Amino acid sequence: MSAKADLAIRGAVVISDGAYARDILIRDGRISALVEAGASAANREIDARGLLALPGMVDAHVHFNEPGRTDWEGWANGTRAAAAGGTTTVLDMPLNSVPPVLDGASFDVKKAAAEKASIVDFGLWGGLVDADPASLRELSERGAVGVKAFLCDSGVAEFPALHEEDLVPALRAAAGAGLVVALHCEDDALVREATARVRGEGTHDAAAWPLSRPPLVEIRAVAGACAAAREAGARIHIVHLSAMEALGAVGAARDMGTDVSVETCPHYLTFDESDLTRQGASLKCAPPIRDRRNRDGLWRALLDGKIDFVASDHSPCPPDLKASADMFAAWGGVAGAQSLLPAVFTGASARAGDALDVRKVAGFVVWRLAARPAKRFGLWPRKGAIAPGSDADVVLFDPDREWTLDAEASRTRGVDPYIGRSFRGKVVRTLVGGRTVYNERETVPNPARGRFIPRGEVAEG
Ligand SMILES: [Zn+2]
Image 1 (spheres, rainbow, N blue to C red):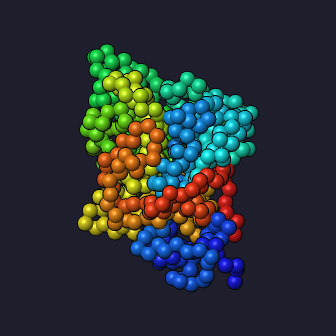
Image 2: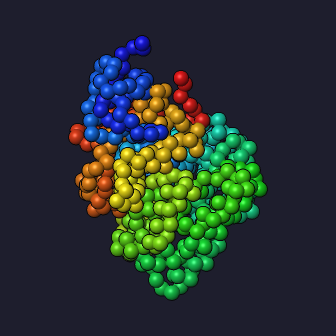
């Protein structure tokens, strides 16, 4: 028998590849065993009776903009919000930090900033702004999770978009470096045309924003990206899909053997145009939040697996950048790191209707928010699973609690559009590597020991 466990989580129903009552034993930051209730001794214990134990969520898309724009959102604050929402691993985008992460040196700068302040584990995306093989090799060698490219204006000057004619060469170079490419898919020419038309009519309110980026903008960009990936032999990941009709091209590409994954975001699944009109710039993002029919279509696609997973695309800014009455002048980005799990659990529970089985919904959420993203980016089973050998990233979750997010409980910087929303299911406690980083009942003292998780690493034993 192996040595005594450091910690035992007792009495929860474990949701990971099924649902079963087991005590979780933790040693040296990893799960050492799952045992029958009360079996085996441990130095410390957590009483989790009545709760579900989920593997920590893997949020594959956040913008913690430190260094450079820490006042927008930084590692300490952003990961506090993530932990409160049950996320234990974040994959951070190469912008809007300064410098953007475009090569080995800027990667090292971002990694050092995160290691100092992050309270959850993290991986890093690099940027793809040209087809430079040396930079891509540096990023790949350092364990970048992949590289991100924009097919339209990124919103920040230091991170240029890829021109249409440069897309295939850039994808080829990324594939050569073994990197998956995350693509922001909006067609630049169509965005410009629609924006000029809408603005020319003199409208700049919240309702004008989606009209300036209609579904066609995404449909065309996604189709082009899928065709380019096939041509280049590249693996791609479509970030923040908002227009459900764009999924047609993805299905066709998959049928032809192209390796393409798709994410959508909690704000597209939670809000619709009427919320955007009412709440204004706090819900401004690109691509935009669309109508209710589209939102219901995204849910169907998520439930039947056409959409691989949900990520927050957490991207706050200082409140004054959201204050303009001109939607075109306001910063585009939605804060959602804290509400990812609650929003998806709430929506999925509501869609189950009278047949609601909270363990089943929790299983769905774990697959779509933890296991699937971890698998896509080579982090599974170290992340995304509660199993012997996995990191002890555990969320204790009360699936029956109904609650409303208020300003005091919101930990995000900037404007949180989820304040005032009611949720079903509440994160009670979050552990990363066996250490508590969030506990709803008490403040956790300085838990900043998040570790860098390189792409492709798997747990031994
Ligand atoms: Zn983003």
